[in-house]
Length: 158
Image (cartoon, rainbow, N blue to C red; front, side):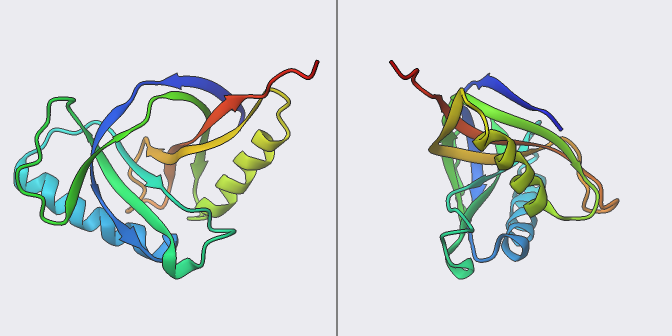
């Protein structure tokens, strides 16, 4: 898939923090979040996972991620139930739209970064990276996702 550079607005999220290997922990976070959404009849349009650590440099048992659902800007989280209210930063992002049919999210991220790191115009800025799920592949095994990494323009050499 092709890499594109996009501007994204800040998004208010209700999140459930998980710690541990991503392939094991994220699913349990979404189970908790799904229960909360059902109990509170929360309308939602965007589901995502915000990643806080690099799996190449952080031990698996210490990896942090926030499975999340977007909510209205004026939303107030009354009953936390292990959840947190936070804001995903807006700004310039590299975006990589892909379909994952084999559960290999890691390969999709590696393909994305391989393209991003060869760019002569943008580089990761370390502020935010996340997966935005366009389809729920939990039953079919086929996920349509957009991977996002916040980026900054590489200054021209003078």
